[in-house]
Amino acid sequence: MFCHWLTIRRLCFKKLQLQARALSGADAINALRPFYFAVHPDFFGQHPREREINENSLKRLNGYLENLQKPGFRSFKPTRLTFYVREREQSPSSVQEPFGAAGFRAVSFTLHTRDLLSTVLDILNSCSLSTDHVQSLNGSVNTQSKQETKRMFHRPIKWDKTYYSFTGFKDPEEELEQAQRMETTLSSWLDNNEKSATKKLEDSLPLRKELDRLKNELCQQLQLSDIRWQRSWGIAHRCSQLHSLSRLAHQSPEVPKNAKGQTVIFTDRSGMNATGYVMLGTMDVHHHWTKIFERLPSYSTLQKKVLFLEERISELLGGIQITYVEELQPMLTIEEYYSILDNFYDQVHNKRLPFHPNSLRGLQMILGSDRYAPSLHELGHFIIPVMCDLVTLQWFIMDKTQQAREKLKRKEESILLEKKLIKAVTKKFCLQQLYKEPSVSSAQMIHSCSNLLEESLPYLQGMHLCISHFFSVLQDGDLCIPWNWKN
Image: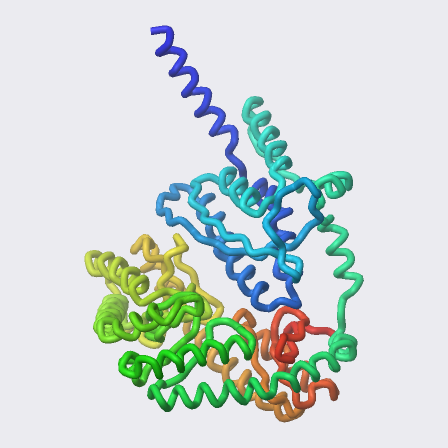
């Protein structure tokens, strides 16, 4: 009996400890400051690929942390993330993962915890970052819980300078101050980088011609609609991927015939994506690509099922168009997209929402699995969670219908203006190419192009120009400038 009582006391004490360890959202952000400064995209200006990966992973991480803080959060899905972590000074005795010559290392980990504290500790430990400050923060939370404080008082963590010298971390405040002092103007940056970019561009010209030749040759040989790339890989990398596809076509000429009329996209995984593009994973061998080509007829059947579900959902929701927008949604396979549509269709079919037929025709919506409340994107798309309360959904759509139509109209006007400005800037500076990164919005592109038309920048003549968020010169000589550049 006494042992049983001790066991109960021990379990109750552990439960109280777990309750006391609960962190708030502000605590979690403060605790993750060393991590944010180790992976922040601003510090990867010279490495566009790593910067893009960190940007995408941060968006998914923030969504995960937001979900953990929502009351009644039950839907749970492990999240696999990859970050490039900047190098910090290492103690000779410490054992760390090897760093590349560029001064950063790749770290991958899976989030599967259900509370903020465990998640924060997992992130820091996975990136080999100190957790001492989290333990001290946790201690303060415990103290507050024991004192039964009626309200939480949050303040940002400000570590003493000795903390950085001891741990090897870089002082974020000093780095930000230095970055602000060294704010770069477009003219000064072009002055300093024009020669380097010109040489890289000249060196890349043979490869660029080879890329165009290979792409045209494969499109004709395999009767493809187009060949695209998900990421901003270098010219040499793209040529290598096309050579691999060409070898497969020569070794097994019958295999790619199923891709006739299709768009092939080189990406991180193999299969078919939600838009119907054939995905060839760049890390996969020919054996995997062969299987994908062989499965294309079955994918065609799945595509028809997807179209059927989109049409049925549209009919049940007043004619609103169900669409998939690559820029606003994660890369989904067609199987994942079908599952999302199927789950949502079951809900709206059983509920039968009272929308008048065709009352929402002309509007668009996308389905998301990482939200709990519907929203209206600035581009006019309704973003509807799969697990959304249908009564809330009905009233939200009815309330935002006019606003959505206005946003869609502005989006169409912006697209036309953006194309016009791109054409004007390309002509003025005799650019070989002017494009933007996917994360740059139409409004940002319009802002940047409008300002470029007012400048005299002879260094841009004949260059490949990318509107981005950072200054950088790509390996093949493309100039990347932030959309909000200053002169």
